[in-house]
Image (tube, rainbow, N blue to C red; front, side, top):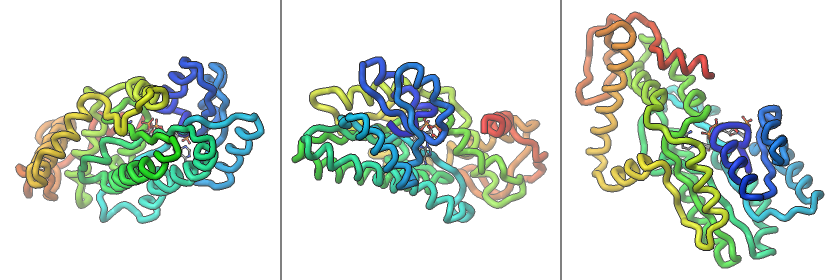
Length: 310
Ligand SMILES: NC(=O)c1ccc[n+]([C@@H]2O[C@H](COP(=O)([O-])OP(=O)(O)OC[C@H]3O[C@@H](n4cnc5c(N)ncnc54)[C@H](OP(=O)(O)O)[C@@H]3O)[C@@H](O)[C@H]2O)c1
């Protein structure tokens, strides 16, 4: 289990322990997993972007005489920003964790599972691998990549008795959103793209319809234990609806919806800032345009909250 130190990972470890599994829980912040150790998890320092760290974890598991029946690839993060502004190094880092690190660990685990003809890989993707929004371009790119990799891996490994499932969480309460929106909160109001970034920062701060990590944990337990695990699990219901809508709608219609939503949230942020304060003229929605720019520069409550959380 990777990314066990918070959010979805923490909930999955707890659910698996309740099911009676032996669970190796890995993350970089080992101190954040002491309560999981108290519940019986075998806690390990793991950075999936570091080959030595992966090797050390697998050596420890081997030394314990344990054969892995399942691997849950959960570690991941997003760092939002418009494509012109996100440094390429940051984009690479997201791919290093969400794609290359995930596959590096998976490659090491596969030979044993294949020899034993038993094993399940559960990848925590995202609805962001099936739908897109601007300002999250690089994160979406990593999760779209994981969709393709999971499908290819499933077909390649099925003849050896292995199963691969992909979980597609929607909005879930965890540390993810605060990390994702942090770069957006460092946005000076006069900067280019201010409006679209403000809209996205507000969307990311809105957890009014968010699901719980436990909903995702339930899907993971099913993927690891069911006689016929599903290829995909989208949770909660909103994630299924959005994936369906994206599939159904022509690109122009999806785009119009996205622009409308961003404009609405950007306006809400401006209202929070003292009412009527407008954002600059970069276009975010069909109803946007060069507007009066009398911004106070104050941050919205949501933005302040995000900074505090970060
Ligand atoms: N929350 C959502 O709305 C949402 C929606 C869709 C998909 N997801 C996906 O769900 C997964 C879990 O996210 P979450 O919501 O639980 O966020 P979270 O609370 O921020 O947890 C992310 C976990 O990933 C770990 N991690 C990050 N970089 C790592 C690295 N290099 N090596 C090992 N572990 C690393 C973190 O641990 P350390 O920092 O201690 O290493 C942490 O335990 C991610 O893949 C995320 O993309 C989340």
